[in-house]
Figure 1 (spheres, protein in one colour):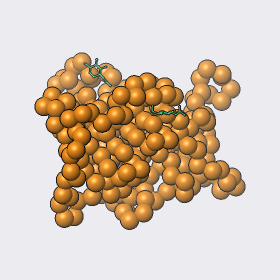
Figure 2 (figure 1 turned 180 degrees about the vertical axis):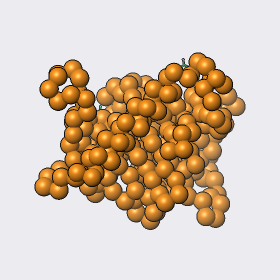
Figure 3 (figure 1 turned 60 degrees about the vertical axis):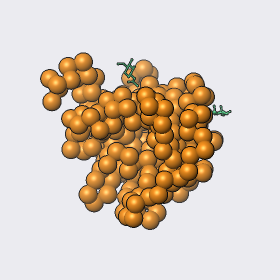
Figure 4 (figure 1 turned 135 degrees about the vertical axis):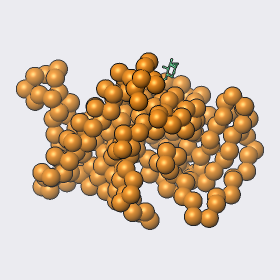
Length: 230
Ligand SMILES: *[C@@H]1O[C@H](CO)[C@@H](O)[C@H](O)[C@H]1NC(C)=O
Ligand SMILES: *[C@@H]1O[C@H](CO)[C@@H](O)[C@H](O)[C@H]1NC(C)=O
């Protein structure tokens, strides 16, 4: 697989290994869940960073940049690559979670579609009803620069058969989110996060999207951030 993508090979393998390690850490955490604490779910700050979306079958569904306004609940995600299939290259999403609306943007043709959002959960969000599982230190707890302290939250999503776990730093920067149902599972790995919106224009609707009406959703289709990668 990697020989098809020599430029990406090293980077994507490292990212995958990183995310898989985090999931193993989550599994360990859950098997030793500490129920004595009653932590409130944390709320992420504004963020700019990189996100990769992989299936547990090992397919990279997307790698790209995100910008997130955590108060306005707006998210932009632009995917740069996906493989073995090229399905998400050029995927460009602008999500308005408060309005339950999202846009799929095609900058090349200056076109966009406006869609209704049915599930507002997304991998950068820790819902208010998330259950605290544990706090843990990855790396070394005794060597200052060799550790990452994380909290792990999880829960079930209403009206779906889906569950999630999210691990986040003490300052509530998400590190990885695992989303799973009986039949599918996705890992969202978040890296290179800066706790600010670096380019607010990315969260503004492009002028060519103004005045669009909401597309009809085909019967049986559920729109959510995660569904964009299925
Ligand atoms: C997307 O690809 C361009 C060109 O290869 C690169 O400069 C940029 O850093 C990439 N962005 C992300 C988020 O990987
Ligand atoms: C978060 O980003 C939005 C959009 O750029 C901005 O309006 C808001 O003031 C920021 N909030 C904080 C707490 O920085």
